[in-house]
Amino acid sequence: MTASRPRLYVDAQFTSPYALSVFVVLREKGIDFDLLPLDLDTAQNREPAYARLSQTQRVPTLVLDDFALSESSAIAEYLEQLFPHNPVYPRDPQQLAKARQVQAWLRSDLLSIRQERSTLVVFYGCQGEPLSPQAEAAASKLIEAAQALLADGRDCLFGQWSIADVDLALMLNRLILNGDPVPARLVDYARRQWQRPAVQEWLQLPRPAL
Image (cartoon, one colour):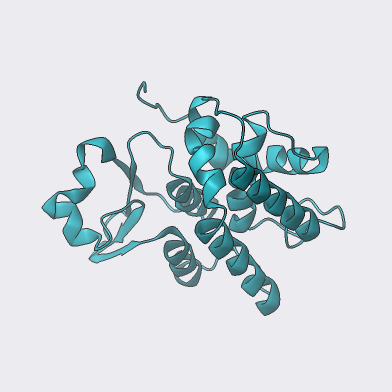
């Protein structure tokens, strides 16, 4: 029996940083898949058919044959185990743990940046108001951590590219593309990550007008 083509459910505006992350993993691994947008504004993610696939009723969700999985880091790690070619995580156990740490941190912290510099800044060119004191503190924390992770001048976090680089670049670009002050070294890093073909393909997807 031929395996069915994988399906990736994403938001219809293509602004989810987590959908981007999984999209890049699939492209980097050379896995063909169908991209299925859901209109979150009209609650398509709450419809029964999708809710049966995704208990969290969120995007992204990946469906492989009869197995559905949500939450981007879980999907990326599953794909890495299932398709170990073209790795998207470091092989060294300590570096792998650090990559997962970076991803978990970016998804669970820095809320004020995510609120005041939504991905509409990144994917639609919208501009935000000046950062609040809380967001300024979060931006300083982000910059300090990124500088420490890239302290030796490396182009990628762990000596060679990993999906954590795209996730970090996305968070930095919330500030950079809004014109907020970010050190030139980090601007160059984020720009390099943004030039990867898989990221460029995501950027070129047809987005509906706001």
